[in-house]
Image (cartoon, rainbow, N blue to C red; front, side, top):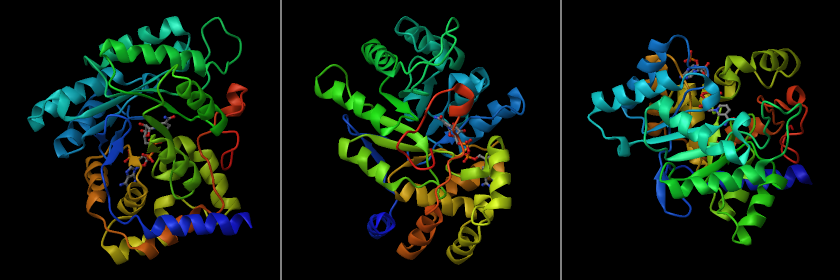
Length: 338
Ligand SMILES: NC(=O)c1ccc[n+]([C@@H]2O[C@H](COP(=O)([O-])OP(=O)(O)OC[C@H]3O[C@@H](n4cnc5c(N)ncnc54)[C@H](OP(=O)(O)O)[C@@H]3O)[C@@H](O)[C@H]2O)c1
């Protein structure tokens, strides 16, 4: 029965989503670009990082996704400024996201975390500031704590400073999001503008996306190319040998066949599928060819049958990014493949 309900839901999505629309954000109605540029693991060398970000902006990316934890903020910041200059754009022409790391969750450390990020990126403000995980661990803490409510309240205060345009979350479970909704209904704090989460054809989480739409929360898809991120290597390799259904996503036969039929590349098919669901997709690449190719997903048109075929790849969902065991916490409770 459950499988049948899920199937009906997925077909429902496929019928109404073969156009790529900009994503309208609650509550200001401002548009988040449908394709952004990811920067995790973008640290081959500082020059490569800077040049890749600059090249992305020059080629037309209007959204850069950063984080304190990626260890490359200065080089990314230089890339943002270089790219804006080369493209003849102003700061306000692009959208920059960054994230509060777990070691700055204590309410009196939240603004310091943001200030450091702005300094490293050499920017005056962020378009979006996200809580990277719902758990924090200060330097004196032995264990991780579920301290997201207090940290969220502190992030809310940042909105008054003008240093962040919007605030949001990453990697929350339904119960954790419900807690923030409860506080928002009481008028204590606003709802997150955006929830960034792992989403790709092997982990579609369609119902979870609908739940956000019902609250007017925009969703950003991270790791949109699935198990292409080499950090997920061990898990991916295990899958290749134990579950023949989950080879590297861009080598999946279903994706490759659709790509051939539609005159797109496999990466463009996967990203166009992500954008068709009303989520912003933020692929990372250190190669100019891939950076350009990924932005080209905007022109990749998929039909209803293509979308349904890709949806079916997620019938046995696989999550690649779950640090629960290492951190001694339960993340993603109630979600697929937690
Ligand atoms: N909030 C969070 O907790 C969280 C977690 C994970 C990621 N993120 C964000 O989401 C971004 C994207 O996710 P991700 O970096 O995990 O993975 P991803 O963008 O899905 O995949 C990146 C991998 O795919 C390869 N690739 C990119 N374009 C390709 C193409 N056209 N053809 C073949 N291979 C291609 C890249 O290699 P090359 O570099 O060699 O091209 C890289 O190894 C991150 O960079 C980060 O900004 C956020």
